[in-house]
Length: 288
Image (cartoon, rainbow, N blue to C red):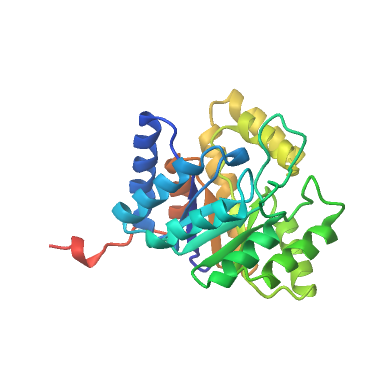
């Protein structure tokens, strides 16, 4: 089994306590030498300033390659591109470009009157600047708003053709679905890398509810396993085993890169990475 390259996603802190947790998470995972770490945007653009601040701080203080999420929600084209320029001026040249989730309680995504209508328009504008490596979202299971899987694949191809360099997928629980999606993308002429998104299950009830909102299939065997593990107080052990096996299955099928959604809790992600052979890298400047 090949040792994979990894990347990690964080969300911006909204309190002093959360700031310490984010920094502890970064400190715990930085030694694994990730390709990059990304910082998310809240639904409806609610954490725009927090994301910008967290990205700038991480870039300056961590030594990691930091990617900023950028969405089309609740902002004009000029405002969105100014945020992108601010990132570039701060030395951040990686963006995860997304349409973005609508504000909670709204009736779905509504473009800003002077904003980008969708992620393809945002990607085209970022690509024209020439300043960024651009990553985009992909859905190995049908997006809740898509007509069918082919529509998802067609839209992903439009995003790649618009200038995206790589796709990061929504999380999933069984390798077969991702592998079928990867094959279908190749058949559609998509040649950019498609990196599977991995969500270690820190809290089964929360993850199950999140999965249902995202349209991610929750297998019956996984429901049964966590029901028993919860009774036996072995959820963490099961979570580590399930996630490690999923990643191993992907690596056995030629996947060489994984993107972990950490939820700012590093322990399970770190344990899975260690099990896959991703171990701390000693930097020369730290050697006496």
